[in-house]
Image 1 (cartoon, helix red, strand yellow):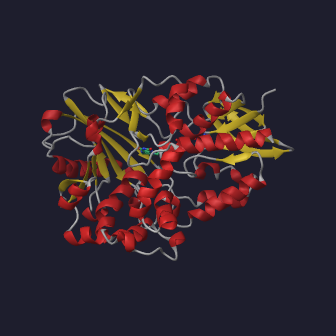
Image 2: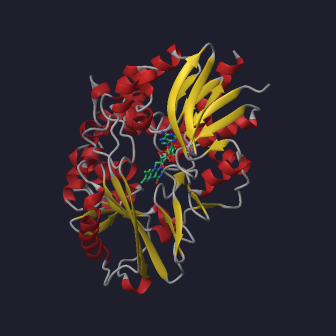
Image 3: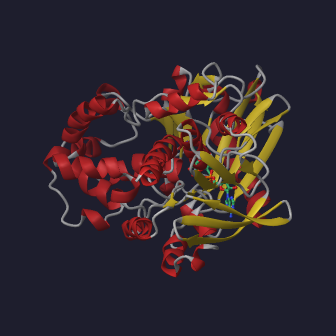
Length: 458
Ligand SMILES: Cc1cc2nc3c(=O)[nH]c(=O)nc-3n(C[C@H](O)[C@H](O)[C@H](O)COP(=O)(O)OP(=O)(O)OC[C@H]3O[C@@H](n4cnc5c(N)ncnc54)[C@H](O)[C@@H]3O)c2cc1C
């Protein structure tokens, strides 16, 4: 009889591993607290607009994404960002300046002063740090590239990816590829050339060059299609009570639609957020609970706005803009959603997705949402030259949005590895390990599938 694997969580991490296990002939059961699949991937249609309240896009950094998409019959639904999506703006002194991507544009840009540009040329000659291990991305970038580069490029970029605080995020854990460039090659510029060669050998794409994708009907299309293929094996609306191990089996006590029961399996993979797993991990390992609880997830409010195109002065020719924290605005940045992908708004309208909160706004709560949205609207309208109110305004507050791989994270990761080796058959996955992006989650999901398969075949 096929061996059985239970997976906690029907977000992309859990569903992708379930898909590969199922394809390899294993028997899977997925336990999900909500009544639909997707987790952070939430898409909604309102009045002709298509809203993504979680990820708005993914980067095709691994061939596993396409493989998964093809497997679940979504090849014709997958779409790539318009060319214009490559231009990213940074707000500086209330002006939107394009982030230069080519050497010529870099020399001309007003985003950096002449001395900052000259400073960048010193990068290949900056030595390695003695303490790279305990370094924040802010320290790392300031040391290698200078303060202006940190303030005007990396700080807003970190907000855009992690909604994070660059002075807290660990360069080693949150930006492992950047860290490796210094460790292996002694610098970023030298390493970029050599790293490209290695990636080519692995058939992988760097984040700068990877294609940005979504689906005609939004990002939730993917988890929904995987879930459809796994119909009957997902227990939605379930509460997990307890995990125990007996002999070589893992027993999961759950309450499914009001009824108590248990699932006995040969292996279990958790992909639920660390703070959720910590609620039930005490019975297996109290120290694991401490590590799971130490990972910080900041609050993020996602605000979606729809306008008549005529009301907007700013030319919509880019991905959107990010805001350095020294600009002191009430939001982190805005994606010009209808420029990037088709179907995000009716033809004569424009759609925007704005991000508010993050690790620099730790005390931001849902009670403050309405007041903050009003302040953000004023600032956003000034930047974009918008007159009048949005014709559509929808928002979602994520109380704990994205796990932060802060300084000290490495100790948690070490413990997770120790836990897995001492508790064979129980695996820890999800976006608090191996990267937070959709692409990284899919890559980690495949690695988890391989780990589980190897364990079951032993
Ligand atoms: C606002 C926002 C914007 C983002 N933007 C981008 C982007 O543009 N590009 C990008 O690549 N990435 C982005 N990300 C990150 C990316 O979307 C996530 O890291 C990824 O989707 C996480 O997938 P996951 O399956 O690991 O976790 P989740 O999606 O969080 O899934 C976990 C699942 O577990 C379930 N669960 C929780 N507790 C329990 C329990 N006790 N019992 C049973 N089930 C439980 C949840 O309901 C959920 O379905 C964004 C994330 C957020 C929040």
